[in-house]
Image 1 (cartoon, rainbow, N blue to C red):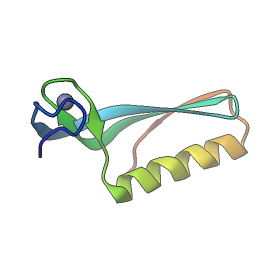
Image 2 (image 1 turned 90 degrees about the vertical axis):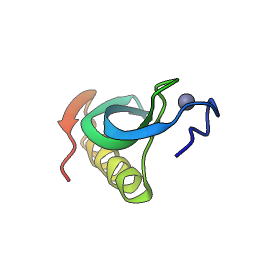
Image 3 (image 1 turned 120 degrees about the horizontal axis):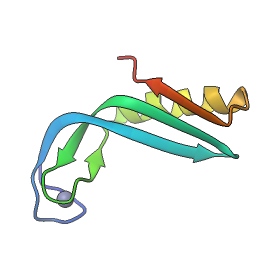
Length: 74
Ligand SMILES: [Zn+2]
């Protein structure tokens, strides 16, 4: 698909690292499947992946971790 950020690049399926910050907790999730723009490097997650990433972040937050690094579990 066409990148909706830079409007010039094409996106390709790949993997990215998502970093989320919430209530003083930093959650890093590796190997998240995403469409990645060849031009600007922006990534786009589909709905299911987004939901799962946020759920993972919520769980880490509820444990009051300061920094947590996880691998995306498909
Ligand atoms: Zn782009």
